[in-house]
Length: 87
Image (cartoon, rainbow, N blue to C red; front, side, top):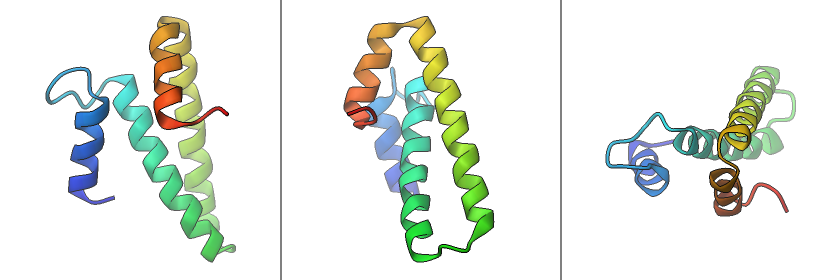
C-alpha cells in the first residue's frame, strides 16, 4: 500500500485530523492490506509466508472488531457498513 492510499484511508476513517490509532482506522488499514494479500494469493497459491501473514491480519482485524462491538455498537455497525465486511 502506498503512502497516498494510506493517508486517504486515515482521513476517511479517522475520528479527527491526524488520527492513526483509532479502531476504525486500524480496521480499515487491515482491510485494505487483506484485500491486497488476497489478490496476491490468487496469483501465488503456494506462497505460504503470505498465507500466514494474511491469516494473522484477519485474526487481528477480528479481535479489533470484537473490541469495537463491545465498546460502541453504533460505531461497529457504521464501520462494517462502510467497509462492506458483513453482507
